[in-house]
Length: 177
Image (tube, rainbow, N blue to C red; front, top):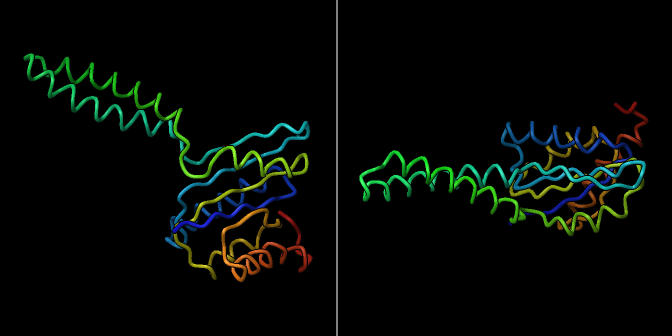
Protein backbone atom coordinates (compact mmCIF):
# COMPACT_ATOMS: atom_id res chain seq x y z
CA UNK A 1 0.00 0.00 0.00
CA UNK A 2 1.30 3.45 -0.89
CA UNK A 3 1.77 6.24 1.63
CA UNK A 4 1.11 9.90 0.89
CA UNK A 5 3.45 12.56 2.27
CA UNK A 6 3.09 16.31 1.68
CA UNK A 7 5.86 18.58 2.96
CA UNK A 8 5.94 22.40 2.80
CA UNK A 9 9.15 24.41 2.38
CA UNK A 10 9.80 28.13 2.94
CA UNK A 11 11.78 28.55 -0.28
CA UNK A 12 10.27 28.16 -3.77
CA UNK A 13 13.13 25.94 -5.02
CA UNK A 14 13.45 23.71 -1.95
CA UNK A 15 10.76 21.19 -3.01
CA UNK A 16 12.59 20.65 -6.32
CA UNK A 17 15.84 20.04 -4.44
CA UNK A 18 14.14 17.56 -2.10
CA UNK A 19 12.61 15.70 -5.05
CA UNK A 20 16.01 15.52 -6.74
CA UNK A 21 17.40 13.94 -3.56
CA UNK A 22 14.56 11.42 -3.45
CA UNK A 23 15.07 10.53 -7.11
CA UNK A 24 18.72 9.83 -6.33
CA UNK A 25 17.62 7.55 -3.47
CA UNK A 26 15.23 5.84 -5.89
CA UNK A 27 18.17 5.07 -8.18
CA UNK A 28 19.85 3.46 -5.17
CA UNK A 29 16.68 1.38 -4.49
CA UNK A 30 16.13 2.99 -1.09
CA UNK A 31 12.71 4.42 -1.95
CA UNK A 32 10.10 3.52 -4.57
CA UNK A 33 8.10 6.57 -5.65
CA UNK A 34 4.76 5.97 -7.32
CA UNK A 35 4.15 9.66 -8.00
CA UNK A 36 5.62 13.02 -7.03
CA UNK A 37 4.37 16.55 -7.57
CA UNK A 38 6.16 19.80 -6.79
CA UNK A 39 3.92 22.76 -6.00
CA UNK A 40 5.23 26.30 -6.16
CA UNK A 41 3.23 29.22 -4.84
CA UNK A 42 4.67 32.35 -6.37
CA UNK A 43 4.88 35.79 -4.78
CA UNK A 44 1.67 36.70 -6.64
CA UNK A 45 -0.17 33.72 -4.99
CA UNK A 46 -0.31 31.83 -8.29
CA UNK A 47 -0.05 28.06 -7.73
CA UNK A 48 1.92 25.98 -10.25
CA UNK A 49 2.08 22.16 -10.29
CA UNK A 50 5.06 20.28 -11.71
CA UNK A 51 4.16 16.63 -12.32
CA UNK A 52 6.92 14.03 -12.25
CA UNK A 53 4.99 11.69 -14.56
CA UNK A 54 3.85 13.00 -17.93
CA UNK A 55 0.59 11.18 -18.64
CA UNK A 56 0.41 12.74 -22.12
CA UNK A 57 3.79 11.32 -23.17
CA UNK A 58 3.06 7.94 -21.58
CA UNK A 59 -0.35 7.79 -23.26
CA UNK A 60 1.07 8.76 -26.65
CA UNK A 61 3.83 6.15 -26.40
CA UNK A 62 1.58 3.27 -25.39
CA UNK A 63 -1.17 4.38 -27.81
CA UNK A 64 1.34 4.57 -30.66
CA UNK A 65 2.63 1.10 -29.88
CA UNK A 66 -0.81 -0.49 -29.68
CA UNK A 67 -2.04 1.46 -32.71
CA UNK A 68 0.94 0.29 -34.76
CA UNK A 69 0.37 -3.31 -33.74
CA UNK A 70 -3.36 -3.29 -34.51
CA UNK A 71 -2.81 -1.23 -37.67
CA UNK A 72 -0.34 -3.80 -38.95
CA UNK A 73 -2.74 -6.66 -38.25
CA UNK A 74 -5.64 -4.86 -39.97
CA UNK A 75 -3.28 -3.87 -42.81
CA UNK A 76 -2.46 -7.54 -43.35
CA UNK A 77 -6.13 -8.19 -44.05
CA UNK A 78 -6.11 -5.54 -46.78
CA UNK A 79 -2.64 -6.51 -48.06
CA UNK A 80 -1.07 -3.24 -46.88
CA UNK A 81 0.63 -3.88 -43.53
CA UNK A 82 3.02 -0.91 -43.86
CA UNK A 83 0.19 1.57 -44.37
CA UNK A 84 -1.72 -0.03 -41.49
CA UNK A 85 1.37 0.27 -39.29
CA UNK A 86 1.78 3.99 -40.06
CA UNK A 87 -1.91 4.93 -39.88
CA UNK A 88 -2.47 2.81 -36.78
CA UNK A 89 0.60 4.26 -35.08
CA UNK A 90 -0.43 7.85 -35.74
CA UNK A 91 -4.03 7.25 -34.69
CA UNK A 92 -2.95 5.33 -31.60
CA UNK A 93 -0.46 8.02 -30.54
CA UNK A 94 -3.06 10.76 -30.98
CA UNK A 95 -5.67 8.79 -29.04
CA UNK A 96 -3.16 7.91 -26.33
CA UNK A 97 -2.07 11.54 -25.94
CA UNK A 98 -5.70 12.62 -25.69
CA UNK A 99 -6.45 9.99 -23.06
CA UNK A 100 -3.27 11.03 -21.21
CA UNK A 101 -4.58 14.57 -20.84
CA UNK A 102 -7.82 13.23 -19.33
CA UNK A 103 -6.17 10.86 -16.85
CA UNK A 104 -5.05 11.93 -13.38
CA UNK A 105 -2.36 9.48 -12.39
CA UNK A 106 -1.30 9.08 -8.78
CA UNK A 107 -2.07 11.97 -6.45
CA UNK A 108 -5.32 13.79 -7.21
CA UNK A 109 -4.67 17.29 -8.58
CA UNK A 110 -7.75 18.74 -6.85
CA UNK A 111 -6.45 17.48 -3.50
CA UNK A 112 -3.00 18.96 -4.21
CA UNK A 113 -4.48 22.35 -5.12
CA UNK A 114 -6.70 22.42 -2.01
CA UNK A 115 -3.77 21.66 0.30
CA UNK A 116 -1.52 24.10 -1.61
CA UNK A 117 -3.90 26.93 -0.70
CA UNK A 118 -2.40 26.83 2.80
CA UNK A 119 1.11 27.60 1.49
CA UNK A 120 2.61 31.02 2.08
CA UNK A 121 3.45 33.10 -0.99
CA UNK A 122 6.94 32.45 -2.42
CA UNK A 123 7.15 28.93 -0.99
CA UNK A 124 6.86 25.36 -2.24
CA UNK A 125 5.64 21.91 -1.31
CA UNK A 126 6.44 18.36 -2.31
CA UNK A 127 3.74 15.71 -2.55
CA UNK A 128 4.98 12.13 -2.86
CA UNK A 129 3.21 8.81 -3.07
CA UNK A 130 5.66 6.21 -1.78
CA UNK A 131 5.33 2.46 -2.41
CA UNK A 132 8.33 1.26 -0.39
CA UNK A 133 10.96 2.98 1.69
CA UNK A 134 14.07 2.32 3.79
CA UNK A 135 13.14 4.79 6.56
CA UNK A 136 16.52 5.33 8.23
CA UNK A 137 18.38 6.07 5.00
CA UNK A 138 15.63 8.26 3.58
CA UNK A 139 15.29 10.23 6.84
CA UNK A 140 19.04 10.90 6.72
CA UNK A 141 18.53 12.48 3.27
CA UNK A 142 15.46 14.43 4.42
CA UNK A 143 17.46 16.04 7.22
CA UNK A 144 19.16 18.22 4.57
CA UNK A 145 15.94 20.16 3.98
CA UNK A 146 14.03 22.43 6.31
CA UNK A 147 10.31 21.94 6.03
CA UNK A 148 7.19 20.84 7.84
CA UNK A 149 4.65 18.11 7.21
CA UNK A 150 1.38 19.33 5.69
CA UNK A 151 -0.46 16.02 5.29
CA UNK A 152 0.45 12.38 5.51
CA UNK A 153 -1.03 8.91 5.63
CA UNK A 154 1.92 7.63 7.69
CA UNK A 155 1.50 6.16 11.15
CA UNK A 156 1.74 8.71 13.99
CA UNK A 157 5.21 7.40 14.93
CA UNK A 158 6.53 7.61 11.35
CA UNK A 159 5.02 11.09 10.92
CA UNK A 160 6.73 12.23 14.13
CA UNK A 161 10.11 10.89 12.92
CA UNK A 162 9.68 12.64 9.58
CA UNK A 163 8.76 15.92 11.28
CA UNK A 164 11.81 15.66 13.54
CA UNK A 165 14.09 14.99 10.55
CA UNK A 166 12.69 17.99 8.67
CA UNK A 167 13.19 20.31 11.65
CA UNK A 168 16.66 18.96 12.52
CA UNK A 169 18.49 21.41 10.23
CA UNK A 170 16.87 24.40 11.92
CA UNK A 171 17.56 23.02 15.40
CA UNK A 172 21.22 22.29 14.64
CA UNK A 173 21.78 25.80 13.30
CA UNK A 174 23.24 24.45 10.06
CA UNK A 175 23.54 26.86 7.18
CA UNK A 176 20.79 26.45 4.63
CA UNK A 177 21.80 25.55 1.09
